[in-house]
Image (tube, rainbow, N blue to C red; front, side, top):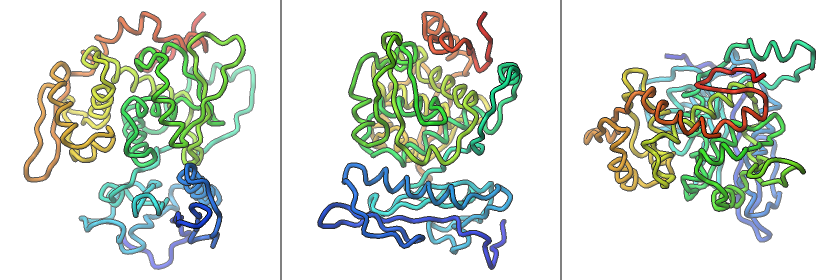
Length: 374
């Protein structure tokens, strides 16, 4: 259990409020005293997150100096739990139906019991890379840094559950996962035709429209001479710019998410089925594919009501060995088929052109292993 300090070094907790006004919603910041800034209603959420990110950048601290701000305030942001413990991470929380947003350092224990909140994906600080003749060789020999693919995808799903409107569809959420993990240092993302086919989106404009209407991204014109089917976009979510992990590691996690959501057990055209399989795979434990999580939490990440999630689980007979909901705790318990079986079902799909993005960039990625193309 972590002891509460008497004088925290830096108050790494920032709160903004969206108040109604005659000319539109107004942004009020409790830290810098900023108030009365009139916003466009459609972009109020993005402006609030962007303002919080600015505070996080200016008050950056090394990980060993960060403390749980929730515990410093008597843990009043959540119900009582056993104690403050675990690594300290950035937690994004919303209250009052989205009128109040808070970004703060919180330990794993406090973050797990805070309602309407998600951990910002764990990353490493952004660094400016210098070009040299040996840069390609270093990139090929580098070791992955930070959490693994499953952890990155799980944290991204959790974050998107808070960052996107609750009515966002499953197809749009699958698309958002790929965009967030594949974006470059400037927030630009390029999805080739192979990735779009794996997502089973094709030329469907609805998922893109949902993300654009929520002010999460903006599609940009494709460069002249680009291959047919390539879609480019600019991400507008400011929280994703606070810190940036190594791009090869994020792309590896995006490939893992793509494989999990495009197996033979998710061959149906229902995006809710594919997103549910991805969530279960991301939340499963290390032992034989078994997992346990709150039913409402998984439903929230899938953009479904708990009753709708149960209906989807009943349809997953080809990749679920079994599942049940504990009546005492409301936790969902499940067991997935081994990942090797799911991966084997998707290899034929990948051989038919789903690796177009890696071929275009001169690097073939198969099961997380980068192989240079000659």
